[in-house]
Image 1: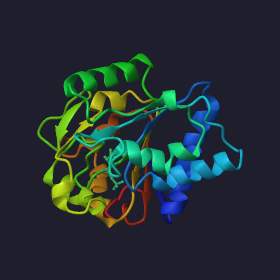
Image 2 (image 1 turned 45 degrees about the vertical axis):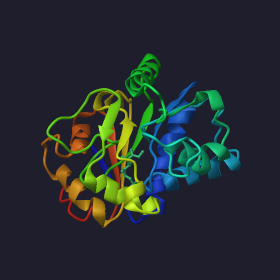
Image 3 (image 1 turned 90 degrees about the vertical axis):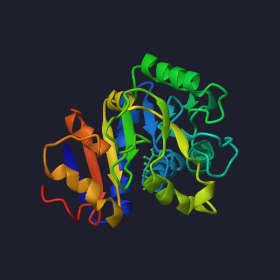
Image 4 (image 1 turned 180 degrees about the horizontal axis):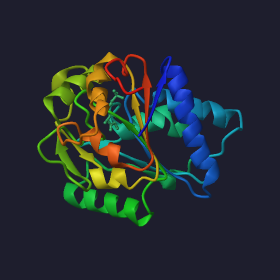
Length: 244
Ligand code: F6R
């Protein structure tokens, strides 16, 4: 596990954008695994900046997002589909047909999960996967629990996640209670994993990298077994780390 601690969010985002850019430049048809939330926003902004300056071409890029709320139409301001378009896809030249997100309104959610997983795995998984982490160390919406699921599935959100994500909604009651999420296996299949964590609220989950243990109670710890995983932190998220 590579651990990189940066002065602040902007420096960390710039470094992560470098990793994404080099993946794009090295592959003829790069496949990016993308996350929503506050953690990757700076990375998307930096990639957009490089695209606008003609330093980066995304014409051959395919994307797969990690997750989507169940029950929100893609036009809903808090859907992850809407988030990705507003904060990234609308500003770069990724082709519409190469953008993949689960459909949280699918009539048959199990079938939607099966097809989403199958499409991703048939393409060989992602070349780079950007992950944020939840307060309790969830990745995508694989919540801290006594068991984790390998494949794409519908997950009931932890109360802590509902509270954390309520900051984006008018009130806590508006936060969907479940989401379609990639499972541990589809995430792990990525050739390169980049985990972003910023701010004091992530320090406890990040402290789980102080030892070599893996636990379903902190799902991000499974990334310790990935051959090419990098933790990208600011100083606050690294506050309880003693291995750097
Ligand atoms: C979002 C996702 C979540 C977030 C995590 C951190 O697609 O998969 O796991 O990455 O909840 O969210 P932020 O970055 O908003 O702190």
